[in-house]
Amino acid sequence: ETTQSGHSAPTMTTPTSTSSTPFHDALHTTYITTLGDKLDSPTSYEGAVTEHLRVSGVYWSLAAISLLRSPEEVDALMGLTRPLIRPSESGTPKESRPAIVDWVFDCYDPRTGGFGGNCSQRQHPQRLARQPPTDNDQNQRQFLLNDETPCPHDGHLLYTLSALQILAIAGKLNDPRLDKPAIAAFISSLQNEDGSFSGDEWGEVDTRFSYCALSSLALLGCLPLPNDDKDEEGNDGCDDKHKEAIKPVIDIKKAVSYILSCRNFDGGFGSIPGAESHAGQVFCCIGALSIAHSLHLLNDENNDTDPKNTHGGNASPGGRAGADLLSWWLAERQCDSGGLNGRPEKQADVCYSWWILSALSIMGRVDWINRK
Image (cartoon, rainbow, N blue to C red; front, side, top):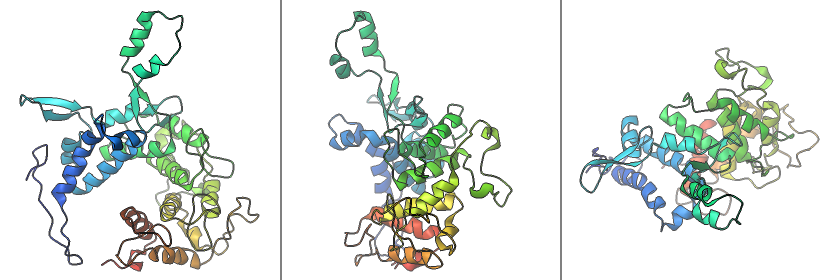
């Protein structure tokens, strides 16, 4: 069996010792490589309702297929760094889609400094048709109708991180088109006084955005470390090339303090202080703390991140029980089927296998669940 680009692919891998279920390698690859065409179809309902988050969808697709194929095969199958070439009806090679990396840069929003979830034609004909007549002549109107300059969606932290992750997979974080100071300034502008982050200029706050902010800055090479510490190699967390251009960045102490204020009595984390513990939020908070070199604060008996309860959260567990209590809460998410749910009394969902196993892996406690 071969994939669309002619690369050979096994029909399935050999079952592991812990499972008799085969892994259909080739089917996964085919699904991923054909998904874009299906979503781009003008009759695709799924494509229409996910159009606003396409950058994140592309990242997840690339991350998945990168686990199955070599970097060279991923580039050929997905068109990551070069246009995707497919045979035309006549059999001659034909470019069917620009390189994903080029499309990602089309999604950059210079107005905000962040990446949007997609880009579209600058002036859609239906949009222009609804505009009232102006003093501009018909020639200018026709020029706007024919203008196919990519128009990015508004910048958002979610899609900024996904865009940077795509560029990281492609080895393009040093692409001259990447305006690191502007992106860092965009992220900095979204940090609130209490240390939290808004997703965009409209102000929604969520611990997902804290993770996106810290992860994005880490990928850019300009994440400040807490207490102005240096890591084991003597680095202070900021790329020398951009150190002077990207300041101020964020208040890392407040960012960490806010994340810890979202911890609940059961050990889990919510989207904001006092919100219900949720496995997806747990991953975001644990991931962010790890990136910020602050994971040890889960077990810090003297850690009082919010002594006056200014964030309005629940009393959070401290001391040695911190990480253990959280890990136990995560382990309890395993259902009879072996799958994992995101909250108590919910059905298992494979997405939580990712969030929970990732969080447990960061804390070194994957063995707390039944692997079989």
